[in-house]
Length: 84
Image (cartoon, rainbow, N blue to C red):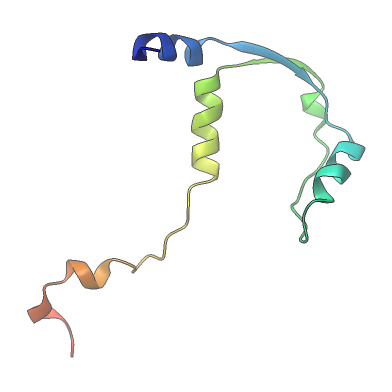
């Protein structure tokens, strides 16, 4: 698939119909050892139009790995300037 076709596909709005209920939340939570914070979302009842690219962007932002803030700091400071 060429890039233009792929971009056309992910840019098209798709309509989904889904529901959120307490039983579904309990089923998802049953797979985890800790509380996932899964809650019933009444706004998901019915159909909605979304673009796959927006969903992927929000998923990427929500699952952004949290790096140690000073992980690369020693490598960026020249050896002669490091505190002994």
